[in-house]
Image (cartoon, rainbow, N blue to C red):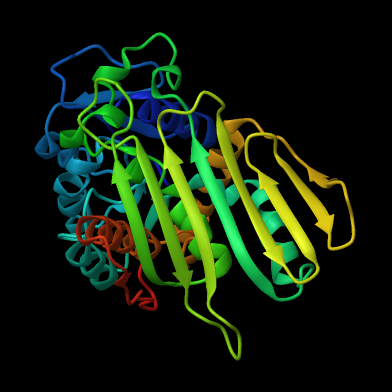
Length: 342
């Protein structure tokens, strides 16, 4: 029975988790930990704390870490050592440094660590994966994925220059902010074997992070198959909000549109795309499923759908991407799948 919840961070995503925590567990006590000195009690919360020491005295059973990525580990580690189950918003951190230690702590104490890649809970993306798993395209030849939106339009009414997305010190930039794509590509197509990359700031936006990333990703070959190559483009500058993945195979193409909630098919001998699935969902729905999975994992002592190890594997791809961009060459990876982590 979960009766005490801690929400760390009260930005837009922290407020969403606070609202959903109150909705999902209406009888629970909810505390909020925020770095800003403000004693005003947020709507839906019962307590507000300004330090991790105060928050630990509250003895939360679960915590959602939704502060900037650069600060995730500094609060996640003491909470994990206290036996608190963790849902950490994506990305797990801003680098791989220290993440193995966190996962080891969670494993040794037997607490759940989930990573907040909520796109995996979208019915349309789940259907896209299941269709590919069922072999509707036969052998896969290639994958094209892209995501982007003009940063000043992300959060209407706020100054984009003050956002986490715009600041390196807070873990911003296209690569970390749009790492959903890296997560779902590995989920659907398998481990990444190597990457080549270009990372740059192309626009005149007042940010100190990259606004454009282009990746060539090779997935580890499956039995008797050729390696699968994917292109991935991420940006903070395009005017048309986009989240699309197209799989190309021997029997045709399959295209997922995460904004429209659709899947379209184009057979090898067909001229026009045919819509085969539509389920446009409000954003809260994927987060509700994420919460249900997190709570179920705690209650049943099972691995969450998006584990801490999954979050670390995304960070390993990000680290390799940065290395590849720096040396203008291919960088190889070895993705780990330790049983029982998170």
